[in-house]
Image 1: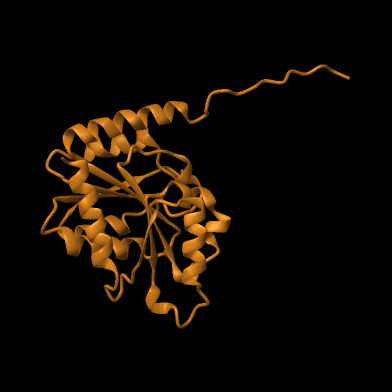
Image 2 (image 1 turned 30 degrees about the horizontal axis):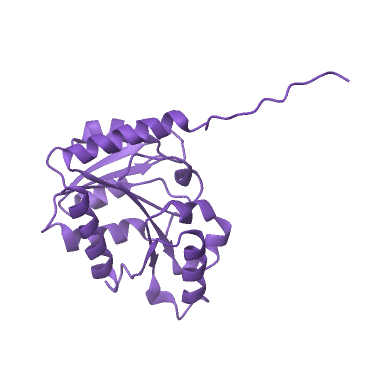
Length: 222
């Protein structure tokens, strides 16, 4: 039988990205620009929730949005209609953004006059959770139709987020969704995570979410 070597990998395969992310975060802190990495599955209502957030905060904060997708500019056009600065990032088939790609987008975008930049990440619950983008905070949206079991199936995503928005609560009469169970499952993974029950359609819960986000931006930009 041929001999073989066992090689211990002691360095994270994400080490270079993590280093770039820390540097980018420090630069954004110095510029007093808060970067929110917003993640979710496709169809969770990410863009609609973002529109509601912008409507609530654009009178108080200077906001910009970077839309990341494999293709198309649909979301960037939708956000541009809200009156805030918007740019579309195409990932060339990749299912996530890393720190280098985020920094490239920020340089093209320009952040000098912005208090809050939202990075709407590529829609899925796996790849985006694995890569630090250099964001000040991470948030995700879980919609009621997706089910309350998602923290069990995609634990990393829920573990890294500072806030989780449970969206489409106006549909709970149609879907079997257990509020207590989802909160328990999220907090078991991430005890400090803030959880907001919202409806981007009706506006319910959006004020509470926006108050939290506004306070985080203020703290970052001190």
